Length: 80
Image 1 (cartoon, one colour):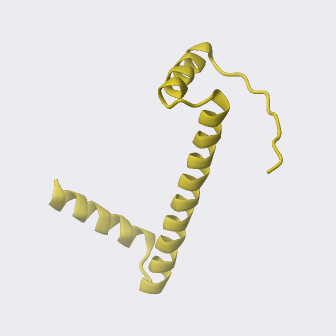
Image 2 (cartoon, rainbow, N blue to C red):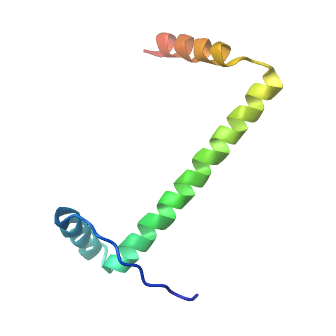
């Protein structure tokens, strides 16, 4: 895999915390940042999939947006 160098600016307090976390994980700054970016991208892909599945389910059920809001409100009232 070909690597590319990036220059970014971060607040010094964030860099301090990042260095502490990296040290605990026996990793470098680059390893920590790389891992964080991969986690972020995966999480975004998961949420995009969840929303896509939700949209498909709504289309299949022919519910309107306000119907879904009422269902969510009812659920929240009954579970709290």
